[in-house]
Image (tube, rainbow, N blue to C red; front, top):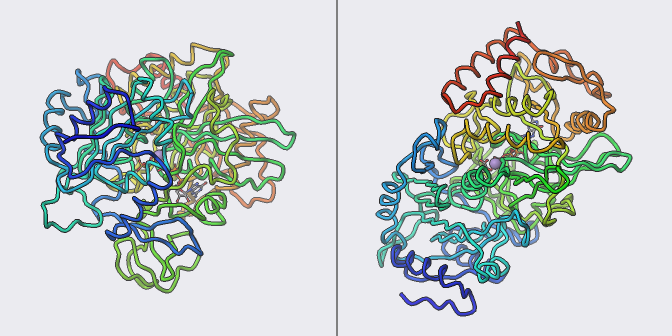
Length: 594
Ligand code: GTP
Ligand code: SPV
Ligand code: MN
């Protein structure tokens, strides 16, 4: 197949790679993406014609589209996600491993002819601000127009990335197919995917990604979890920086002092909400740099600087409302893609938690009729919106800053009904690294599998670390030794419950009270007391809040000793890859509790 690259790229190495992949995948057509608005509109139009997209009511949500996935393709598939490095031990006990050569041979078989009857799209993109030394380029080949539309929102896609590729800048090759070739008279489904064959494959040593069989989110938008976390974390280890599952937020106090924080919570545990929080305490201001991923390196002044590699939000829809997250709601007023939410009769969208009362009739996420008496939810619990960060009313002005923003505090957290108090602070970096390593959280609908089960999710990176997690702990300890200006470290839990199963803490905008305490700890103006697990507030402002303070801050020694036992058992899986500093901190915690 002849491909006309004129006006697209002069990079002959890239041209050769694309030709090779076209020969392998055997598409009917090839589309070299330029990332333009026109291209987005045409691709979305094509999807409307095929029935894959429904254009939403332009009076309610201009430029927006609704779609629903195949019911078997609604979330990341951790069981089908592989880290393929030469030695199995280097992928570690928390990842699935296959030999890279065997896996590549298998992927070549799967990709052989996989795009027959379809268009092969070639997507050049940049993760991170154009011109930043921290940014990385990728080129994704895909047969999914849904991916093309989403990538334009989520990444800096097209011309500017192409300019850098023309100069010979390195890029991460990302191969993706939904895995459903079409014969001449086959009718396509509106969400082609493979129930039997899903493979999300990473080759961290050669920095390449192969994804087959899924069209959904983190499985298919390869710049996000695959590149910006799994491949980038391995690269960050080699090069001495950090690639983390963290939001980045700017916080300004009533005196006008501004500080940036990062926070790592597992999937669907509150990052987007914290990144855009609308403070209930007067005088405080929140601005969003990122809602999911942070890349960080130590700057010349010894401080840790972060960029957001993404340019959009692929956020959890259910629970998002004008009450809980007005900034997200405003961001979503136009130019958004909605996946697996419900469709209203006047072609708007609805999801559980958007309004107290559901509409009288909806089209549910499976495309069927829905009324309030239906026994199933109208939207899938992992229904998502895709929307540009540049529409966020509280977007931080430093979003495109090539140097990134200086980080003063790092927050870990999880979804814990009991044991873990509202907030505590690490004594130092090593203790903070241990706190990150010992995060546990209840599983959410963001990944396929049982929801609600408590599992260890170190640094909220369990599904996203591209190498041995024990070595990753070691990398964090090493980073802390490089500078004496590293951020302070905290842990929060918004999700404690009382005996009736009600949340102990109102959360959302009220979380500013906890941020205020952390901010003031860094300023040196907030008090804390030592406890066995770390420093807890003695001066958190809970005025006008009807909460059970004792329950929020209780440290139940028996429960914590059980926690220690569980952490010790978990850490044992890392064998001699578990760093001394982490073992030491666990022993200290146990001794403190006894
Ligand atoms: P990913 O995009 O999967 O990485 O998720 P995330 O960490 O960005 O989580 P998100 O902010 O989308 O929140 C997930 C769910 O938790 C939503 O349904 C929210 O409404 C809910 N949530 C967020 N913050 C809070 C909080 O402070 N309290 C309570 N109770 N629920 C919250
Ligand atoms: C997550 O699961 O952490 C997400 C959504 O941010 S996805 O991109 O599908 O992984
Ligand atoms: Mn995430």
